[in-house]
Length: 222
Image 1: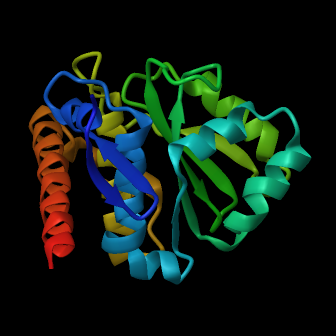
Image 2: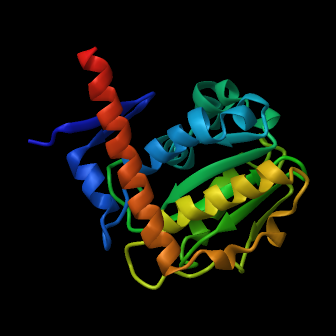
């Protein structure tokens, strides 16, 4: 039995997902998808509505990475998402080579349509091949001129925090660009992200899910 804890917009979070926010656990696509859903509909709603940001669900990114037909990918996902109209697009990237659930590492891509580039940020540095696969497949469709790895992104100190580091990096970039929309991604102080930052982030999103779940149950009783 795996009880449903929260239904939030397009996201479902189960008890087994919630437990992954404890220390030492590897985050799955449902947790990252929930955070992206929360960013899009709450934290950065104004910026998303104004086409400054787009947060693409990890399951969609995985499909785009593995889809063999560019025409199918464009018709089903890329065109409806209007990614060319967004200034900054955030894409969580999983190392999983198949459509099955799993994978061993998360990193993330940032499409910067202000200068037609795509940046890869990785807390281990082992996922660049996955970034290249995505870039080579979609560079023409998205009019991208280059793929760059941001080396200043901090390294995790264990084998389980890659997803949390990716969330932290995406949130940090979005908060910075929210205040300074013409900023370059290389000027952001990524060193703010460390073990304590990640520990606090895990607690923050676990508490958020529990709070939203409590509010949801309260509404049901009214």
